[in-house]
Image 1: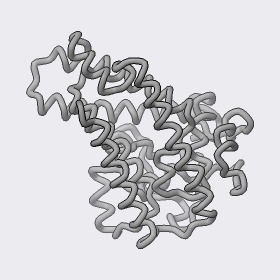
Image 2 (image 1 turned 90 degrees about the horizontal axis):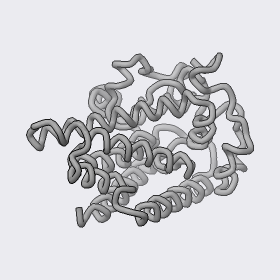
Image 3 (image 1 turned 45 degrees about the vertical axis):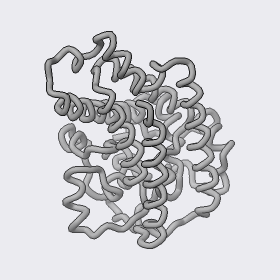
Image 4 (image 1 turned 90 degrees about the vertical axis):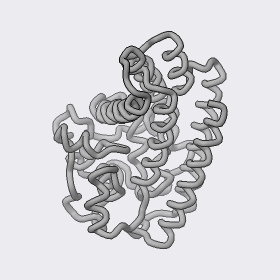
Length: 278
């Protein structure tokens, strides 16, 4: 799609701006660390990851999810390219299936200790806001890209489904990491159709039982169906502690230190398959 980059960047900057203003005007929690330092590091990581993925896409069209969707359609790869379905239904099924795969990927990164080391960089933030939602280690970004490419090749979703999914994944990740106040009645209804900030915040608790819950990024149904849903943090949202027990040093929330984190620090017994991780 000719305008894919423009569409994605438009949604990215639009949602980022809305969430940033919302966080200032109606925050859910008081911040415990310097927002200036965190935003500097987080935004640089997001920028460098974006550049890295863009450079990878220069290798060939099939190294980007939308390019892979076009290649799969051309060569008849994937389930949806071999079922006679209405276009709209193929788009809906494609988006839902890709969202489930990202849920499964997230569980995987909490289950395998080596993958948890990479993913734990996302969890060392001592506060949670819109920038946390896209701040992941570059190696995790590459692995995630590989998983998405494989998923698109196997599923064969329409190009439009992949574009919608990519926009939703980035947009809802910024939304559900946001430090924003939503009326409790609205929030209860909203979390029936999308992962809300209150729902996902539980996942960033220092309590391993809470960290290993609420893995969804976009659709909230997988956690409910597969037994990983936790409605509220034990200590309440205002008093819960965000981050990891073994890391409480706000002075190390710097760009280079965060890149080095998986290789120099043991993030602790959070993986789901270890004693105390459930």
